[in-house]
Length: 266
Ligand code: NAD
Picture 1 (tube, rainbow, N blue to C red):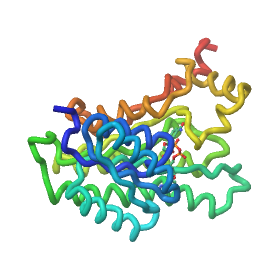
Picture 2 (picture 1 turned 120 degrees about the vertical axis):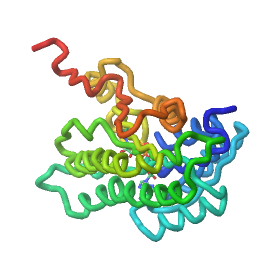
Picture 3 (picture 1 turned 30 degrees about the horizontal axis):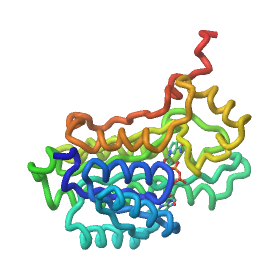
Picture 4 (picture 1 turned 180 degrees about the vertical axis):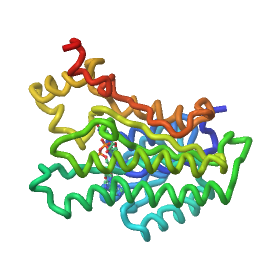
């Protein structure tokens, strides 16, 4: 039996980058996958096609995770398509980088509404669905699993990105508080904290050789991560192999959180 056999997973922002890597890996482990997207229908359909090409099952559903009515519709459509939900990967996120003194309220609100409010709205709906259904022992020891896509910037401050760092710091305590509250329902809640993963969100940081060299100075393991690195960890966190892991952030960062600036002891 595959690790996620007969389980249904919803991946928000699944049409590109880390979300698409996670969606493909979850499907390879046996899950039926809902690939959520906000604007890139083509990107989502390409992920669905890849999953189906590998013999898996997936559908694409549009919703802006920062809009409550659209999130409710996303969960209703997921239920219509697959009848249940076992795994939520709260992945959708964006950056709108500006120096603090030039940051507009619009840029602040946009990042907080997608990266933090979006995670709250989706987690709330997933938790309701998990509690309604309860544990199905043939599938999993847990009633449901929530994985929040955080960042190394839930702990590392980031000048020029106050809105983004604040959103991920918020995700950390949202995740931990949900973990505390939902444990009696046998719902597991954890985060993944990626370092630098090669995706469209941080293209400027790896596109040119100069930018790449600068970025590698921050990564002791000396390579940029790939969406697949996160996908494999998401499968583990969603499976019963990690049944006793609850309320943690798993950093997937090649050591970025080791404060490499102090490597020489200086
Ligand atoms: P990406 O830009 O490829 O993916 C982000 C996805 O979120 C896109 O598919 C986008 O369409 C979607 N999205 C944006 N706004 C949305 C909305 N309102 N509703 C639904 N979907 C929406 O970037 P990525 O690197 O794959 O980012 C995925 C997650 O990983 C984000 O939460 C990001 O903060 C986090 N992360 C990425 C890195 C990295 O190095 N790439 C590092 C740390 C954390």
